[in-house]
Image (cartoon, rainbow, N blue to C red):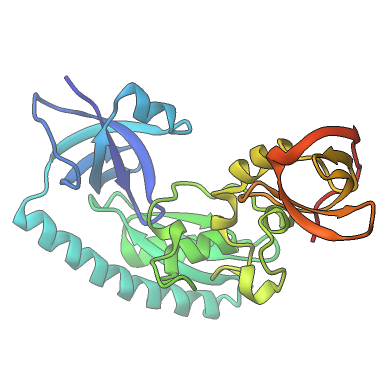
Length: 276
C-alpha cells in the first residue's frame, strides 16, 4: 500500500500519511487526515517514495481518512470564517489582559479538537489567564504557539519583490538560516531594503544558488593569487564565478578579463576573499 506526502495546517507542515484502505490519491488531491493534532484537511503532494523521503526532514505521520467531499469543503470554509471571528475575540481578550504580545493568526483545526493561537512576543508572556478565558469562550482546547518574524511572513505574506508568491508560503517547508556571505558571493546588492524579504530578514532565495557559487568559486584561483597564463604572469583582482572568468593585472599593469581555462599555473595562492 503506497504512502503519501501530505501538507497540512497554516504552517504547511509535511507528513507521511497512510491510507486507511487501499485507496490511491493523485497529486493535489484534497484530503481529510488524522494527525497528532486531530482531524485536519490537507493536500497530497506526491507518493512517499524513497527519493521523496530523502528530501524531507523528520516529518510527522498519520492516516488519510478520506478524500474531501463537498460537505468537507463547505465545512473548511465555515471554519475559516469562524477563525476570523475567533481572531477578533482573542485580540479583544489580549487587550483586556494587557498582555505584551502581537496576535498573528488563529487556526481552527478541522475536527474541532483544538484552536491554535500564533503570536509574537519580545519577552516571556504569562498567558495562563488568557488560555482560561479562550477555553471558556470557545469550549475547546487552546494551544498557544510563539513564532518568529519569518514564521509571521509565512502565515501572512503574499507576493515578494520578484512578483511571485513568497517562497515561505508556497514550496518551503522550513526556513534555513541565510547569511550576508551568500549575498556577497553572488555579488548581490548589499542594500538591506533590496535583499530583505517581507519578514525583514535576508531573502530565502539567496540560499538557492549559494552551493553552486561556492563549488564554482573553489575551482578559481583566489583573489590576490599570482598566476601564469600564455600572456605571461598576472595577479587575480576579481572573479566572475558563473562565467568562469578572472579579472587580472598583467606585469605591464594592464587589466584584462581572461577565462579560467587560460590559467597555466598558480604560483602563489592569494588569501583575500571575494567580498566585492
